Image 1 (cartoon, rainbow, N blue to C red):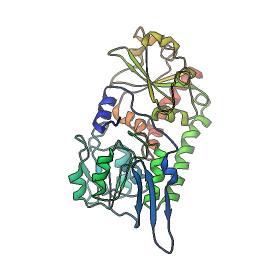
Image 2 (cartoon, rainbow, N blue to C red):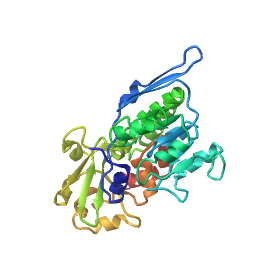
Image 3 (cartoon, rainbow, N blue to C red):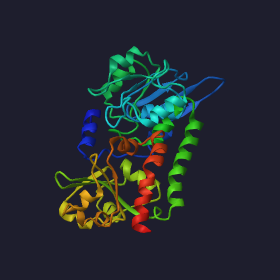
Image 4 (tube, rainbow, N blue to C red):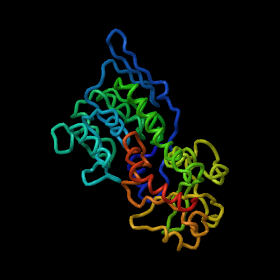
Length: 344
């Protein structure tokens, strides 16, 4: 099954778990060759291989993550989608805005990317009007038919994994290869991974803390759990935390990324911390006042980490090489504070 981008936005808004991320994808096989002063890059993806024989100079992107990744490598896309869920007043994100300013391409400049709306799907016409020489959809739910259409506009890097499941590391590696910046991409990946790991190394309350990432639905008493391959679970694991046994023991297979859980079994969800997306204005006390959710040990003990802001949620649910440093600054301190409060 292929989910549309709109469907994924709706899933997020309705607090249904977003899709998992998978590491170790085909991007590992991407390669670039610089022989005799020439350039050639080959990027495998779900729909084949994309071969580039010149470094791209006008890149257009689809979906989340891809434009962020281009920017993370200090390149300004010619075009990118407007951020319609979790975006700021610019139809962008704070981390994108900051990088554009750093590169001298802020939204008030002539060098800012052209933006297009993807609310109703891929915006083929506006992308074609940009005359790009590369389209990046490495992180996307692009169908093969859409890939074929985009390929008529420009060489296109299709999804590295199905339905928005490509990992940020794989996307970064693929974009690095496509732009001749493989070494810069590898260095950046190492830096981000190290910065995430340092959180656990520098905070004993984080290192080894058990966690559950999920969604607690106050409106319908629903519980959904993100499994080990999900973006959020991978984020907390990268900080040095450990996914709770109850989640790993109830994971049916490696391809399942979330699990609906009966609220009647809330007391079985044993962990030090419980992360949940929440509607704006929601407090920990709201969950503690819920008779069923109060049976979750972490809820009862105050070990709840919330993102009650869509912008904040987006930084880890569509994690990428540009959003993760932002999340480290704006979200991780809350995680550390909650961990210290329950683990000392």
